[in-house]
Image (tube, rainbow, N blue to C red):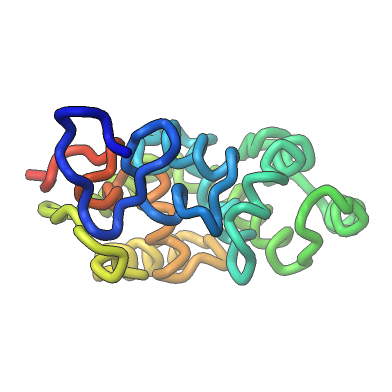
Length: 208
């Protein structure tokens, strides 16, 4: 039950046991999990800046492809250990022998293409420093206007901006990052804010 005096939540927003309305992927009884709740409340949709944090989000979204995000969340600390906290210089220097070692690490997702893509993405991140850096390229994708979604079906899987960014990343040497994966990264890093209308974590209705 919502606190006294609070507005009624929108149809797709789910009110949690703490009385806070949330996006249903974080608050529904079928998928409710503390890892999801913490990620929704403290991270998803908040702005992420800096070369290393952005590389991490892009690589984790690539690892998530075909899997549940909860799987990646629960393995995130292991990914950070395996890939030296996604330090671009360290990951860029990994060799084929390192790939084989990572393929034996049961604590991460043992997908050869995704592991190799992580190394490629680190090398591309290092190379981008000569032309403005990953930060400038990634945040260039922020749309001029972005309306607050009201229902789950209002949230797109990809956009023209994510397609353009995916193409730019591919040109720069990044791998395993299509428009859908890139849009998920844009959502995660606050380039767009897709918290539903009525969610307590929703920011401004539009970006000017």
